[in-house]
Image (cartoon, rainbow over all chains, first blue to last red; front, side, top):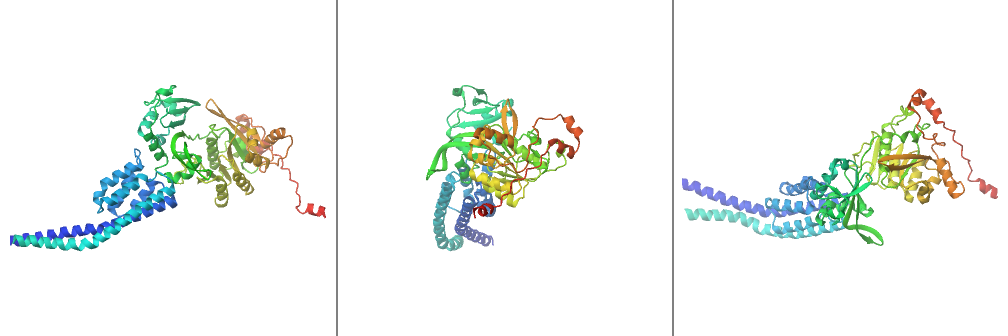
Length: 172
Length: 385
């Protein structure tokens, strides 16, 4: 009896691990897409509205879903605070500390950090160019992420179940 | 003391400035920050260098020298981390920060087709501290009244830089919109609708469109708008009774002012000039004066921290001009045909004894306006035939 309960628990845990892994693969392209939307929005705020950066970041944070909104909200708050540093420092701090909560990889983070180093520091045309460059990089990453998703999402799910089943068989 | 402004400075710079003696901070006018060069302040008409601990010195070698990082952080803060949003301001060489303080910038210009497109490598900052002096127009405003129309006359405020033009203009706008005319005869006039075109964001110091300086209850501000366009926009959209503009001098300003005048709007403007002769030497101002745009010229000067003013009526100005040019070609001013008697202050007792508006009107002795000669446009043609 005890053995059966144990086997069921192992099976359940294995399946869940597989599902969590699969979810990360599914989540990554979605989050990259959200980042792209955020950058597109920033392009409008800078190019058309000429909104000051702290305000633009705060607005973007409002429309993004949770793990990403935190990154922008933290940068905006740091810029608006009285002792706020430069954009580069605030941005880097927020993105380095908050990145682990997202499903994205270092490649996307590096693209965003490079963008942070130039934000607010030059004229409008230049800013738009940097934003487009970052968007191109993210688009490439998104394509790769989608490929990974197709390849590994189902694999992860079935691998979890199968690995759990293997363990159960070995234990029996 | 503009704490909000100091909060914008990087830490080491803020320490130096905030530790200045309180009496000096009260009269602080300018903070000049130059990269790798001594920190300088201007106060009460004098200047001094500042040591890192906030004591002043005359020796530039002992002074605090802000470094490259400090200056870059300062630039980022004063532009609100958004150089792209202040491109137009950079092209003109200054930005205005919260509180209406103007920060002049100098660096290396980037040219495009011979015109300044951008400013980069900014290494000099001149922070000009703006202060609202509520009530500083109390002595001037009574002399600018037009009792017939129960409003203010077209006036041009003239002075050299740093003599308090903008401060005066701001308080005039406040007093007019609040109906605080500082004149017994005008006590029942009420406030006027005031439209302010605030190209440099210095008059109102708007934050998200809301003025941070007190401009009275009936003011509308068009923030950061070019004067010429802004004047027309205000007249069309906000039906002002008085428009207030700062530092006119470009040809399109003159055109817009003339338009506003013919729309029945009173104009209060300022211009950079040391005296009236200077006004007439500037082509745009001279043209405006010649057309009789302004019926009063106010000359401001500052001595020992007090702002003195002298009012010159259009007639006197015309005479002055005639003496210079040898002939008089001026049109009559359009609002008040005659200036109020010379602006010597009467004793307050006499004013009280005189009582209500009629007496005051008599005292101000308005001459009937001379009718202009009307020429029919077709007459010369008929004569020709």
